[in-house]
Length: 208
Image 1 (tube, one colour):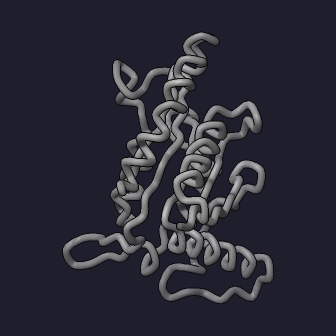
Image 2: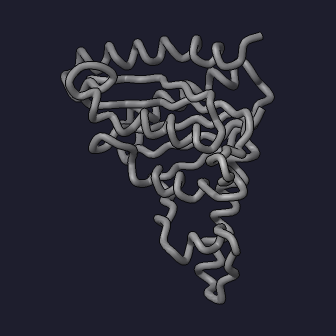
C-alpha cells in the first residue's frame, strides 16, 4: 500500500487537522505495516498557485518553456500528479478556512486536475482517470457545519467530495471535528470523538 499524506493547516503543532491526519496514517500503518508513506506539508512548503504559464505545462498541447524557473514548475506539476496516481490512499488534513479549504490545498488540487492524466472530457461528459483509490479527509471546523443553519456554508467537505469524484475517486470519507473554537470542553470532546471514529473509518474502507 502507498499512502500520500498531505497537511494544509497553517497552525503547525497546534493544528487539530494535523493531529487527526497523523492518527489516520498511524491507523493505516497499524493495519498495513509494510505501507509506504509519502508526506507533503502544503503549508510548510507551499506550491505556487496556478497561472497560465504553469497550466500550459500540462494542458494539451503541452508547452516546453524556455524559462528555467517555469520548467521547474512544470516538473513539479508532473511530480504532484504522479504522486497522486501512484498512491492507494490519500490522507488529507484539511481545516475549514472561511467556509472552504486552505488556499495551500487549493494550489495542490489545481495542479493534479490534469486533463488526460486524472480526468478526460468525452462527448457524454467528463470521466475520471485516477483509479480505485481511497481518500480520508481529516476535517476540522471552528463551528458547526455538518448540520444546522450553517450547513449551507460548507464549501469544504462538499467541495472535496465533488472534486475527487470528478477525478474518478468515489471512496471519500471524513473524520470530522467541529465546534473547535467554542470552548475547551467542546473542543476536547469533539477531538476525542473524531479520534475514536478513525479505526472504524479506516476498517470500513478496507474490509477483510
